[in-house]
Length: 420
Image 1 (cartoon, rainbow, N blue to C red):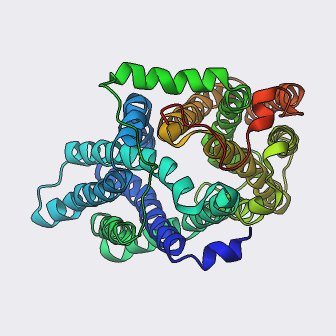
Image 2: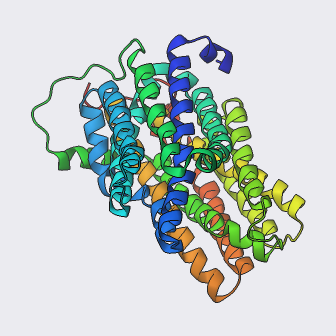
């Protein structure tokens, strides 16, 4: 299969368009909300808090959202989640226009919107394999990853421009509208977003969560890839958390220079390229080798970054680092979707997402402390060391990912549903 087949699929085109529009709107708010908070408070701590608050509901509710998305109608969860998130975001410009917007409302809105996202995102994980078929998942995830990366290039620039032109609060209308458009597009996609379920006696939420955990625990490849994903995301958190400090202290860039924004954009471009090439390199039987090679490559690139002092060279190396890091991420996601039965898709993939999102804030926090006590170079080298160890262990365990009978049987479309 190729990306051409997906581009000729009306259902996938609608899905991808919805994802691209929604991602762009979210990228606008990711810049505009911190601007709005800083304009109102002048506090760096509060500005950082609003930027990191989106991960909190996922870590708290992910284990609940997975079973919900596996048990109930995924289309309704996606459409309803988009509509609810858009409506919640719209309260900020409305309150601002009425002169009653408070900091408390901004934080509550951020938490509520992120909560809506947890449930719709869980449903998306399970819906995509049903929409495109397991054989086309690598190409589909590659395209969607590229769209997300493109949104990260376009959205921040658009958000900053809108904040300057019409005010930060009013710029959030773009995000609110993007969710409404995405909901309409997804609602119009034909077909089911999940396999037919065999009715079961009432199963408790605890047992549903346990089913997902047991599947991960008993599946060697998925278990190792999720563990490696934590090391990968932890190190990535160190890099993203220190990128501004790295630019100023290591590259000698003024803290108000536009080149800092260009450095961020280089990372987004690298991730975009990763999405474009991923469908061509992914193979189920090579998943362990892909993970090991890309993680080790990321560690070497990060180690090189620690010693760079020339902006142009750092720009290139960081872009390639982001490319390698994104391939690692999408490789793990795609394998989980291919190897997991439909009835467990949301549970297994939400757990994977929780692990990945959990690593980044820890990495950012500990990297910041280490850089403060020692130096940015030491912090980056420590992250590179963690990545190198993660890659070596992953390679040792998964280089032959068909090492046991069950893993050799994992092929697109044949994962067994335990409830069938």
